[in-house]
Amino acid sequence: MIKVLIVDDSAVARELIEHVLAQDPEIEIAGSVKDGTEALEFLERYRPDVVTMDVQMPGMDGFETTRRIMSQYPLPVVIVTAMLDPKADSAIFRTLEAGALVILQKPPAVDHPDYRRAAAELLQTVRLMSEVKVVRRLVRQTAGKKVAAAEREKAAAVQVVAIGASTGGPVVVQTILASLPGDFPIPLLVVQHMADGFIAGFAEWLDNSCRIRVKLGEQGERPLAATAYVAPGGMEMGVDQAGRIELKPGAAGQSLCPSVSYLFHNVAKRFGKNSVGIILSGMGADGAEGLKAMRERGAVTVAQDEESSVIFGMPAVAIRLRAALHVLPPEGIVSLLQTVAKRG
Image (cartoon, rainbow, N blue to C red; front, top):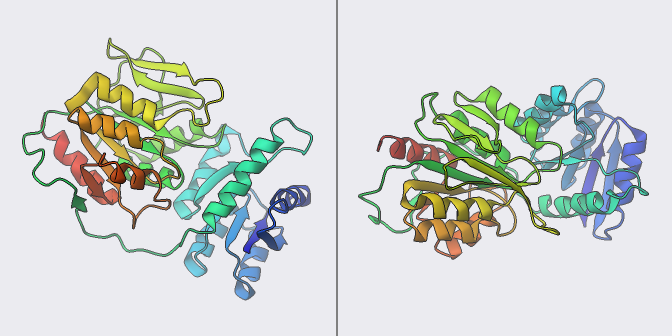
């Protein structure tokens, strides 16, 4: 059984989340509390497998509660919130800095047309997060491993860096981008799978924590150095023949949009050996085939290593396909980017 603690100041929200989780016979509601103080008191006595938590709560908010949980009782924390106010987005993403793994929108009422989709996403996430082993790790001083040694001694100058991530990826993306200098000479294109409504706040959070500029990609703009462009929700992002950002809606029924593989295939075609592709933590296989296409065109390709990945899905598939030239932890990825930036 997967035991879940629900933390939300709204009794209605707690009941709705309980209703959703009760649909899975393998999930048991271990507890339901109204604030962070009660959550910590509960965790002194019981140890659930997953905690779902709102952000804005009276007294101890979601950020402080998450910080204390990760310090005292490391557990997978899933943020389930209705907050879509851009002014409040920073509070949401601070919970990721504190150790939360995923941000989801609260499911709407049962009679709402989006209820089934949101409920299925919450159930899938709780099941997946219950398998994540949350521990405090010291940053490893390692360059990772190289899959094909000495393959690229005479590498070409890099014109673009493409990054794709899903579950567990936001904090790694932030770690990588925040480590780059303000004069980083290469534009970056980023696809991050995220619940609808949060991607603009994600880009703003990154921009506020990085020396480079971070913004949502816009149709027709030319990618500039020291700038990271995040694909807007529901739009595929690539670069057209004129070297400008190209956005287009995903195909009907497409489950993931924006798609990491779309970005990687586009970059492989437009930039070939003059590019870097990086696939980070995430479930599924999105991006693996695209990364392979980049490597086949001569690009530098990287997969996040298993130890540092919250979900070793997308990187694992990429490694299995021999799409990744390097397998690195986040600090190793930063070192690699600093190296390729010096090639001019």
